[in-house]
Structures are given as C-alpha cells and as structure tokens.
Image (tube, rainbow, N blue to C red):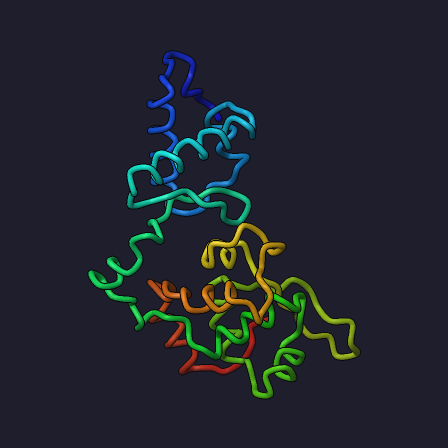
Length: 212
C-alpha cells in the first residue's frame, strides 16, 4: 500500500476492531487474508486474533452479523441465527434462485473438475449446454483447459466466485454429495442473476452453444 494507516495515528484495540469491521463491510465480499495483513501491517496470527475477538463479541450480544472464512479470505455476513426472521421480512428471493439444472451441472463440475461438457452430459443424461452457458456468464465456472481427446473440448472448473457464492473456504471443504451439509448448501443458493440476469436470458434466447 502507498499509504499506511499507522504513520500518523495509533489505534486502541476497540478502534482497530472497528476499522477491521469497516474494511470487511466496504469490501462487500471475501477479503483475502494477504490483503488484510497488508492493510493492517500485521501477521496472520494477529489478524486471526482480531477475527476471533470480533466473533466472540458478536456471539455474546447476538449480533446481526458474523465473520466467516470464504475463498481464502474473510467476509462479513448476516448471522444465520436470524435466518428465519430475515426470510419472514424479506422473503427467500426465489425468483433469483439458480435453476435446478444449473445446480446439478455446477455440483458435477465442482466434484469432477476439470471436466468437459460431454462428460457432464453423460453423468446427467441430458444436454448441459444452457446450464454451462449460464454458469459461465455468472462466472461460477471457467474454461480451465482442454481435453486430451482427438477432438479437443474445453474443460471446466469452478471459480473463486463459486467459493464466495456458496461461502466455502476452499475446495477441500466441499462436503460429500450425500451429506446434510451439501443439501444445505444447495438449499441456500439464493442470490444470483442480479444485473447479469437479463443479459443471460437474452443470450439463451438467441443461442444454445458453448462459447469458446
């Protein structure tokens, strides 16, 4: 960083924790651990200590948010403790839920990556063209290479955004497909199309092919 927060000012522990909250809040998504270390000119251990203290504070006062590890970083999110109340107030936004066909395709790619469209189709038993187009447009997957077959096909892998969307720390933390945790992840897939929604719908009306 060009400028240091600590050149002309010192912070109390509470101020430091407040500043840490503000950085995560402004970030709006997972902030990489390395970036947090640079911002606060601190070690990994010190950053983890701040996170632990904040989460302990939140837990004691039943705060509306908490800090969780996501995609190699940390994110400030709403507290699952209030999930039912928030759904009652604001609904589940079902109109933006990722379609079941996309979820099936995404799950296959997540566990079998890197994997080609043909392999995904064989597992699902139907064409995954439209689902893969949608997942590419939403940046949940990306083309990570090509197959070694005579006819070379692109192979797909999940992106960092996939980890952020499902609030997963890393691919090593993916639960097994038959587990309760996996079912909860699928049920909680509620955000998505946002600004890209209209563009994706227009594209899918015009074409039904994988971009290369």
